[in-house]
Length: 185
Image (cartoon, rainbow, N blue to C red; front, side, top):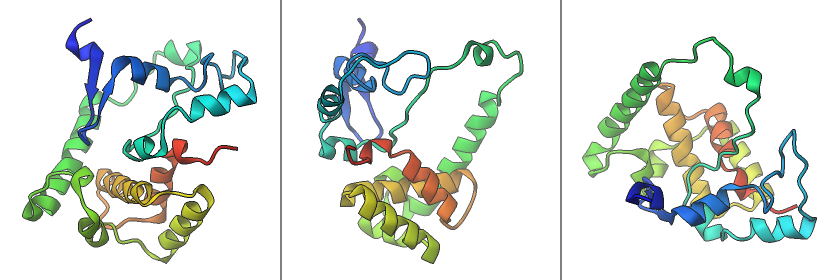
């Protein structure tokens, strides 16, 4: 295996060994928890043990927690073109330019680098946003680090939509990308 396959380096400077990443990417031991076509064979205790393999402090340092469900054959074989990569790239480059312009006076180039003082300045939310964040923080028991990650992610979502302000919609989308913050049932 070449070095690319052995190690990933993430934006935040976090490094994860490929074998660890591969094990943690499955939803459970058998790999079928939540699958619509294959039934999970794990017991509730096995599921609980598997979920606790990643510590809260480690999960706090991962910005996006995205579940990727099985893709149906009809969707894979769909002849219609998806959004072109060039269009997506242009949107991302525009958002990164917004971030560079906003953060360059502070020696930063992207939202992920923001510290608490930058978050307070650039991630202000309205009353509806505060209410949503309060509810989510109390229900999920979010750490301060997770709370800050949600705000930075919401700022990035707003930048992708070329919005100068954070809205409740941006916050809601950012919260959905934090699925592993959910308290164990």
